[in-house]
Length: 270
Image 1 (cartoon, rainbow, N blue to C red):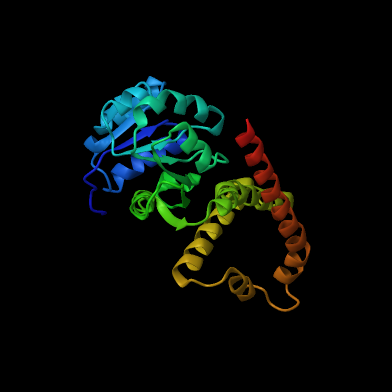
Image 2: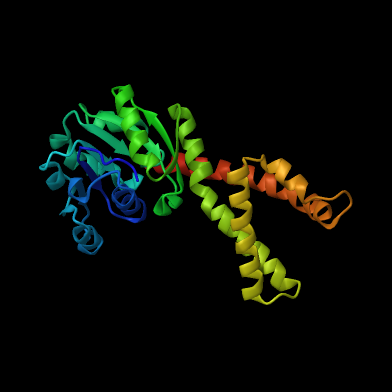
């Protein structure tokens, strides 16, 4: 278990991602529940955190009256501007971490003129503390701010510090990946059903295989291409299948990431 931090963290927005971040910080031992502050307009979202021992608030401005050391903005990019407008008179010079896709640090710094801003792009598996989070610093954030952001999000999975021009790409790749993996599991299951397997049997076999492959790739550190070669005999069934799949899958993935990045830019522009 991680050593608990002796600071307070406020999370504004307790949806899927904000709630996962808040819970993960406490469940990992990184933060004592009494040092967690959460704000959301929906009382139903706050109830589990009150039961956990966190302090709860109806909005971010009220949360800031308790002066958290770190403020995490876990709201959608479409509403971030309005939320920051209510926070600006109270935000001060504290570290502000934003998870809003496509909203650059410069825009957040303009809205919160004294804050030290760090942007992060986490993905859905942070809910089980096995996610991936890309991190970049704004112009006023120092090395210690980035280190603290890494400490917080390392409790939820892997982290990587990068330039801001790389952040949206990392967000598109890691953020969309859970949906891509799920789509492939579903497609492979349906292919098995189409060829004659019972649906439940096909799904169980595919899901168990995916779990095993992930564990081997992670524990052995083998390159995915090398792993493919292990199960691809010359002239065999897997070789024939990969011949049909690899081109369309690769090109489709390139197109999918391009589409995700285009949509990220649209969301950022409002």
